[in-house]
Length: 282
Image 1 (spheres, rainbow, N blue to C red):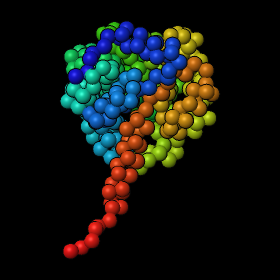
Image 2 (image 1 turned 180 degrees about the vertical axis):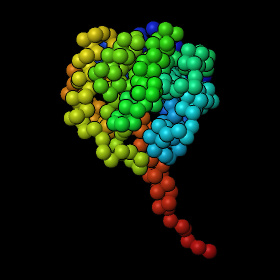
Image 3 (image 1 turned 90 degrees about the vertical axis):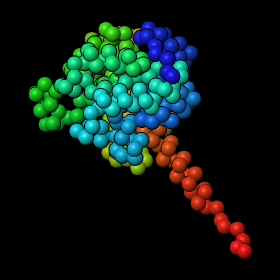
């Protein structure tokens, strides 16, 4: 059963990693086995949410943005039954839909804490929606600011808070809410069978990440800035971002932490078994 950590404990754990020159890695997990072996690989945090649930069902993670399930109920159930019972010593975070108008977020976060979660992420996030749909959501009260409010409540309750931000302006809002870890989000990840074909290239990721780092570190140098998405697929891609930005503290892996490894390993294993040949017939 996963240990539940207080916010300051996680802050100190992660500070210890960065002081040793080690990049932070937050692994998303949509199944117990993903969480189990993310911990075995040394993940600093494990986060579960509805996007990971759909991803590990063989579907597009973007299905988590459609009205086909209760995102917050799915996260709570995934954590209680699949992730928290499997993980031992790694903080487990809940990816929650802060814009959910059907819940009192303060009381719901009490359920999240009681379930054993140590922190929170705003996922699914309005930050990934743009155009007329985003404008309509914002005009009708389903706003990014609701995610900021959720983060502030979580911070007050002692949860470790992480936040997807696609602009420096969103990052500043989350900083004001007390967010511990700003995640520069470059959009859906490329690669594999359900990855996006049109994604933020690595050089554009460098610019996005640096712009967010600059505003965050100017306000609070202690706040961690990590990144996620776009064309960042391999450890070499992550190293490229670390080498070409100033102040990046690590990376958050979703498809790269669970879907892509599973796609490759299961395909290869089954192919190897299928390549066996029958022996002599009687």
